[in-house]
Length: 411
Image (tube, rainbow, N blue to C red; front, side):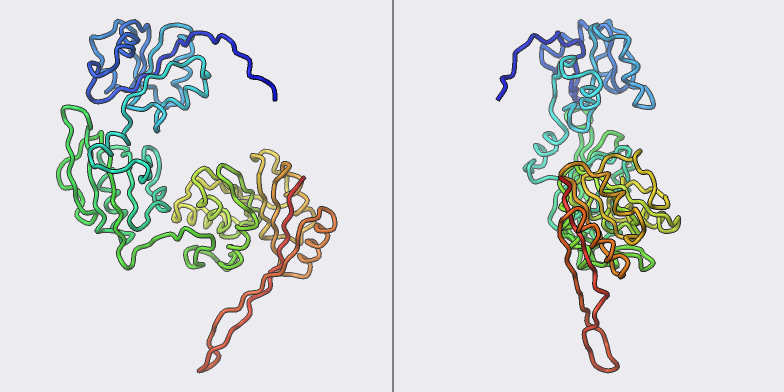
């Protein structure tokens, strides 16, 4: 095993400081000295106000849009630069973007207390038992997979309207008895904590800087996503082009999602497989390709409703050139299996170790799957499902169309 050689890295020129509402005096001596000696300081208007009078540096508020911040910092590369962030810069803060752009060796990071630490210390909650989510620039639907009976959430608000919108959202989903703890300006002179049921909302004016801690209480008719593969079919809006619940569960098992991986869902129909792929882990990504415009729009609606609004949908006629899309870790072919070149397109896009799964219900589709099996190996199986239905005044099981499934791993 090769040794890791030691080397002398250049001195950091960009100091990232986590600043709380308690201001300059609460910072460490190292952070205070960095601010005192800085030539250029960038931060939010609120943060810049907290250090006013403690530095002769050039002050610049965060530019809008946020992406221009890196460009604004570039002319000061190598000088004494400070960026002010809230609490822990790597907890929904600027630290990740700064590190990615300028590199680890350029940064000295002096974190403060994170919002999670502050909230837990006030409420007596265990940090490891909480789901932390930001609604800054993100839709409320991001919360859908996290709304689980007995769950605890810490929600970072976009502004003073977020708590009321969150309360209404939970109430609409049958969780109106959930307890909301409004945490305003923690660690500052204007700190305030108040609690309410979601169905009651918050009647007093809310500070712009706030978080909401949520104790989920699900009513008997609450809309809750099960933490399993194979969501009920009626969770999805569809026109019949839907991988049915039992087949979907087997299909997701064959696709074997891992955190951070990318799925191509070719001939996506209602998007059910893509959506469940993304629900397995918040870092998972999926690209649903569907030729029908009405179905493409339906996929986007389903993704938003079920809490994965980041699902990327492409309206394209397959097979076609997909080289511009991110390289997939897994490919699912749910529609158009019998079309010439469809399976080859998905197979050729896979990296070594990538998985191909394809389902067919027609003889033509089965033929193509058998040809793929002969060419690439893998496994073929048939899945039969019977569901209870009425036959006049009595009941009996009716078989659904048998699904032939092919799965293979590219070596």
